[in-house]
Length: 272
Image 1 (cartoon, helix red, strand yellow):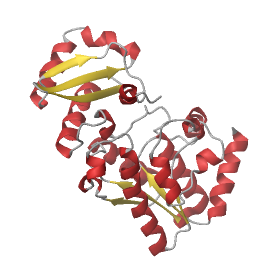
Image 2: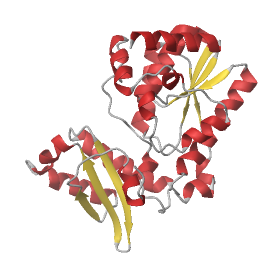
Image 3: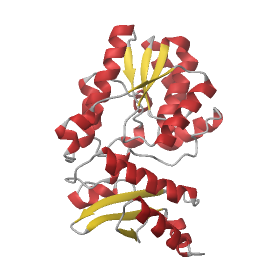
Image 4: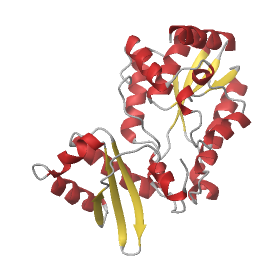
């Protein structure tokens, strides 16, 4: 792991300057901090203020940038004006990431940064990741992956750097909560965001609220970490969840007995 970390720093140093695609997650925070440590003011982190990013995540990402002293810029992309994104096909992420990398590439070109970096790591190899195609089209680099760093190694190195994200659960965008083929829109994502706040404020850590449109109304299918599921049915917590989510606009509230698993929306279309 130490050799991989040194390789990462050598890669970043060799770039000379960079724009970092930043989300406030484990990988992008680690990458931004290391890039700033290596390049100083020759790097800038850029975060996309989009309806698919929860407000708390945006605020936390901004606080981390301020705490660790790296420059951060907030941009707004227009993926919700693209019917290819809104229709929510299995390659939805491609259209989102294409918008993002187009914006990052413009910043790099106009302001003299040599390369755009993003936080894909070695553990992501083999996953279904349509956004990677967009990164390749814009010649963005994934130095964590190039250095061979896995997710667990990034978490361990984040602990060494005292990063607050070292133990942070994985956090995909809110649009990933909507089954393929069902339209994605800001109103729907706001419902999902507020529903997940309800669960997190009740102490649940690994949380997803999957939003399903039925002929008779909206259904919230809650995924919670397997070790946490039993807590839903203690001390009337289930009633608190149900009442709160119905106020948000859900007609039906269910708990998935299989618990949280990464990318469960892919199961329905046979993607592993």
